[in-house]
Image 1 (cartoon, rainbow, N blue to C red):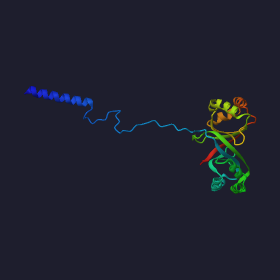
Image 2 (cartoon, helix red, strand yellow; image 1 turned 120 degrees about the vertical axis):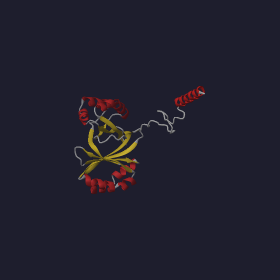
Image 3 (cartoon, one colour; image 1 turned 90 degrees about the horizontal axis):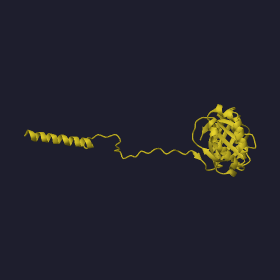
Image 4 (tube, rainbow, N blue to C red; image 1 turned 30 degrees about the horizontal axis):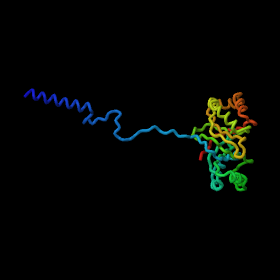
Amino acid sequence: MKQFRFSCMLLFATMVFFLSSCGGGSGEKKAGDDTTGTVTTAPVPVNTIVTTPQLMVVVTHKVADFAKWKPSFDAHDSVRLANGLHRYVIGRGIADTNMVLVAMKADDLAKAKAFSQSPDLKNAMKKAGVTGPPTIHFINTTWQDTANIGAAPRSLTTFTIKDWDAWIKSFDGGKQERIDNGLLVRTVGHDADDNKKVALVTALADTAKAFAYFKSDALKKRTEAGGLTSEPKRFLFTIAHRY
């Protein structure tokens, strides 16, 4: 009898060991088990680079009072929309905060040009407190980086060149040099009617390095290699509003 009882106990112990070893009936969730049926995937990186050409209208002018000009500008938006213009960015000059930059996307070059000369726009500007004639650029952007990089100051640089393709090749070759000197390219483009008139927007990630680079022999050599035929003109600004 004792031998039979001992054999039963031994058989029971063996079964418990077997079940616990296989995880059967334990109710425990082991590390690495996935009981939800959900597959986790890595997030897809967002591409912020836009190479589809985009017509832009960039206006710079001085205002008597930015705080009074801004509401008047916004109130005129329905008229701009009727002429195929879409608000994009407003900037304020660093040297003079009443110098304003307005960047807009445009649907049609002819309509944008006609609107820029219209009495309605001139009256709206006068009412808003614009002082002096505006400078208007009609730009065909060929490359943009739309990533939001914060409040770093920007530079709108305009100049003329001998040949667009030759300049682009030289410009692309200077990418690391610009990064090393605190400059991040945001927009590259040219005049809508003349690709020898370049417009370039950069962010000054490191202002001390960028200002030093603007005066450097390295940039002088780079501009000579790119075939510049005029001295670069820079308008330094901060972004005041994004639409």
